[in-house]
Image: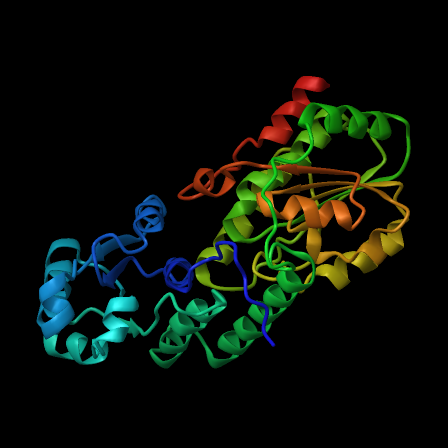
Length: 356
């Protein structure tokens, strides 16, 4: 039987919106009430995708909102001249049975457009990703091979979350993690002792704009330490993901860190085995592991002092149970990495530099 959660979980509608952004869709229309996914819609407008809504109300709940959607499609094309449009379903539009494909056709717009038939009733947010990718593949926006690759990496990410992440229990209390200055002092002491270390970034998509800073901060403070650097910055995935990986890697190299590459920014969930192999080769005494630390199994980290950094307050307890010596949380990381094109200073990175 599938485990039922009693803690908030990510929304499949929001997952669809983020996926459309990664596909370089520059305008999305939420076919539903004006407040649906309000916070994330506003945040995404900081990141290159305009989000409109059909603002369905009581009348449309009864009589339907197709004509309203047609009007908004025509308005969007006229006012914003987008290159790609996506119409995204909501609970309301799905319940009343709106035919969004028919509305796109009836609107008469010439802009390439797809309909994403989704609602928030899925227990797994990856359903929203697939719901966006399938019509994108049909429209020729991605290849059939990339669609299958995405299915694979999404399944791996889901399995990782269920096994060792914030979805591994029915409820996990959020935590701010360990005191960063205490962890920084111990990390720097180990680095200065001459012991062998590894600094590993296994980050999810744009969060790498901040997690990369923690590797840079360690290098800035102990540039001559016996530390190897590893990052999941190989160029694979949807257009925005590839572009972010290239930009972050170039900036890291400019600042003196040329990490070995291991996986892509959307492969964080399946990257654990490859990272474990690198750890086994290096035989480190300590590891700084940032991004999605729980992708790496406890067995691969056995006997090693691990400093991990996550952006999930519900990830602290599982990582502690898995034997990580220090677990830190980058609070509000995600809003700070939306719409950016340069590496953003992290709180733990700032503390490392201050302590040093």
